Every structure is written in structure tokens, then in C-alpha cells.
Length: 422
Image (cartoon, rainbow, N blue to C red):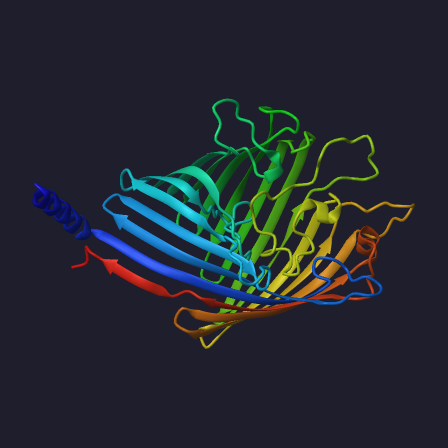
């Protein structure tokens, strides 16, 4: 009987192996950073630059068989020297862990811890620059047919296993519930439209079940051609924030990508985040747009002065940018980015009413492939602040903030196997 069972198990394994695909990969990413007044203007005296090295290490396992696709990604993130020697501090965690089922050629169901990335990642991003990344525990339904795509997702968080109530510990800072629908229609190779509706809810403090819901909706227009691409975005936000304040905010973005040569690209545009007028003391609403679970570092300057509404005291933000991208010998990338920042409204304090100009930033970055699966990235950023930013932060605008980094990325494929390959 034992031999029969073993034989059946062996036959099943062989049958599965005949159609299975397996991939084992890893990522090693140490990053050195030099920070001289990173995110803030320098103080008048006594500032000492910071040096640090962080590292992300991942082990990824992918397995696909028949209609099922699964993926596991284990991650350790640390700062070099942040643990005492000869100690065992657990640091390994699950970054991604999901299973996807193919219902038919056009419809898929995906459940588990996963990344969300849509459009230009302004509202949903995996936040790859961050060593920790960003994932969601969610259920995702995906449909794609003849140029029409729709993704619908839902998530509900709990802080502990319980037999009653849905109390969610708000000290974690996460949403209690999230749902969104993303639609895209590709008319042809030149035109596309996107629509997004997002609802996220946070539990009211000192309650167990009351949820404040924040709603964000909008659309994107894309035009694509051989030499010029144009994108236009508009989103409106309403509902309530985590404190219960009523939200009425909006976001507008327009950018153009011009590629006159194979090795040269120009990317320019502007984005506008609405904000609050400090002089309107009767207004108890929140008019500052929040870009939710999207990328800040990628768009508003590498030195990260303006990554959330509080960085401008909820006064809003306008970013006018121009990027120059050079591709040398088809593999070396050099990039120069320039930003002009200002708020929607002035910052009023002690009868000071400075110009809403915040400052300018210049970023220089380069990406150098070494060998297959290995590259080095490096960059330098310089920020010059304004009188209003000095009043807001209380530091010295006469000194410039600067930041630099060098990052090594090694992403080897450790093992692959295609059992169905003929």
C-alpha cells in the first residue's frame, strides 16, 4: 500500500512538473547617503552632515502552474550598525505573498499581500525607492479585453484576532478599509483614457467601529506618438480625514515628454495641489490634497522637502519641473531634473506675509550597468530655499541643503525551471 501511495504522489509531481514554471531570484541593495540638511533648511549654526548606509535584501519565489500563479517575496531591511553585535534580532518579514487564479483569458483573481501600481504611480506605488517598499493586504479582480481594462480591489485590516467587534488599533497608522476601481480604455496606439475611484477609511479615535471615509476620484488623458507624449490628470478629494475634518481638495497635472533623439528625452510639466488659506479663519475644512499611497520622492525632488501636505503647512503646492534624460551608448543613463516650488497661499505669522515662493531644486542622477543584473546608481541634489520657507521652518535660507547617494543593486536569478518548455 505504501508503495502505491508513493507511486501516485510521484506521478502527480511528474504531471505537475510537466506544466509548471519555477523562478528563484534575489535582490541585494545597499545604499550610501550623505545628508546635509535633508528635508529641511540648514540651521544657522552647529549643523553636522549625516552619513548612513541602509540595505534591502530580498528573496523572491515565483511558481506558476496551469491556471494558478503564486509569488512570495521575503525581505530584510536594515541600517548598517543598528543592531548590537552577537545578538539575534529578528528582521526578516514577508514583503509580498499572493496567489492569482486565471478564471479565463480576460479575468483574473489575485489575493494576498501585493503591490499596487497605476498610471504614473502618483496615487498608488510600490515605492521602490524606499528600502521597505509599500504593499497592501487585499483582494484584486482584474479584467482586460480588447483595449478595455478594469481593476477592482478591496482590503479590510484588523490589528488582532478577535471574536467580536472590528476595533482596529489606530496607533499603526494604517487604513482600516480600502477599495478602489481603476478603468482604462485604449482607443488606439495614440489615445487612452483612465478613470479612478478610491475610498479609504480610518477608524475614529476613542471609538471601536466608527470610520471616517475619504473619497478620491478623477481621470487621466494620455496621448502617445513617436516623438511626443502628453498626459493630463485631474482628481477631486472629499469626505473626512483621520481627525474627522471635512475634505474639499483637488489635484491637477499636465506634462509633456519629447524625444527628439534616441539618446535624448525632455520631460516637462507642472502639478498643482490645492491648499488652505490661513487668512480664512472661519474655514474649518481641509482643502489640502493628499496623494494617498503614491510616490513623493519620484516627483517633487529627490531631497524630499515636499512629500506630504504638512510639509507646506497645508498651504498647497505647485511644482514646475523640467527633466533632461540622456542615454549614452544605449545603456548609461544620465538625468538632470530642475524644480520650482511655491504654495497656493502665503504663510502668515507674526504679521509676516512673504511671497509664496518656496525654493528651487536641482537633481543630477546617473545609472551605470556593470554586468548582467548588476548596476550602480548615484546622484547629487541641491536645494535653495526662500524667505517663506525660512519663516515656516525657522532655519536659515542663506545656506543650501544638499544630499547625495550611491546605490548598488544586484538582482541575480538564482534558479529557473520551465517544466512545460518543449
